[in-house]
Image (cartoon, rainbow, N blue to C red):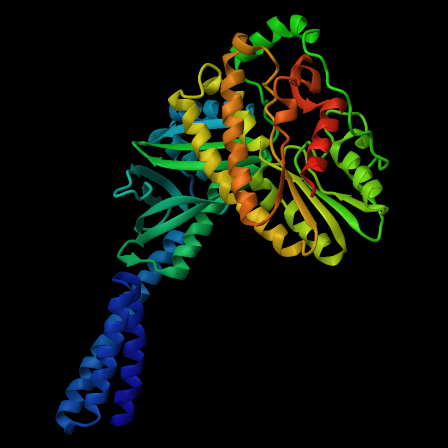
Length: 506
């Protein structure tokens, strides 16, 4: 009898614990298991009659738990394991509105997309219609405002294609180096409340159905902020393939003043000659390593030798009396977020750890900011609410990403001199009062560079002033007077950036 009590008791503890875990929660499951085991312990030391009663009670608990579990398993299988049937069609008007907003964002280097609760639901429902192996027929969304400083969330109600089971729960969103992560706070399917592992599975299902990060990757999107509340979801970020200049008033001002300005700004002299390496690699016993965006990637000039990286490499080789090798990892369109998650940083770190590196130079941040400055939201005033909704999260995200980048470089580049090149303002053409954005964008660039200066100081990274040499001269030092305007430096501009790096060296 005692052995039977122990056996039935252990089975009852496991079965009841599982039921409580999936219906009430972890605490209730632990309490229930302890109570059953305590009953088993007591039953071993009482008279035969009471032991028999205890055994009967344990048996009832076991049968009830197994019955409930079996029924729930059947319901789960019917709902989640059967993909037959069609998902409901998305609301056409809401879907068209959301699609138009997202398509417009793809064309801009800096985007700010605000989707209403209805539009977001239509996007999700359309994804359900297109998804393969999808058991869900419909999802209804409700945006929930955050309380006491907490971020907002989205409540969802799920209707499955098959079976009688329904589901509901709450999700939020967070960011990791520009990548959007869906976070499931709670999920219930019928009477089952899904804990840890099952919640993670639901997160994976949602990510797969929405295909969010794959969609973002297609347009090289870097999400800088997500705000949920007030019946909508606001997403701010940049796209690698978008147009930096999208403001009609800004483009008009440049076109109207380009001819008169072309001869009014005297181009500075090239103080640093072109490099000897007309490419991105050269072998050597010690190396100069470069990371960054299109500036490191030499966009704007016809030969890599004209870029600031090759110029800097030649100058320090001559100054130090050493023929340094070169590895330039720069990628056009890179943001502080994409540099981390896209592989450039890790590739550079691997090379730095495996080789003797004398200098590490990096420029990053322009693409985080400039797309927003050239947007319609910011064309009249950087203080406009819509513009500030772009700029403030940009600075916050840039700080976090840059801290991670410089921390990793500082840890890997032991003994190397690390220099961060700050961002110049391509809108600083010299129009003065004719273009109000020029003054305002200078202020925004100063704010970005102040963040760079502060973060660099934390890790003892040298800071090269890339902004001052081009201020008020970008009509002559960049390709801004071309049609269409191009923010990248010409050969003179790259010479000035190389000089800024050299000036920062001790």
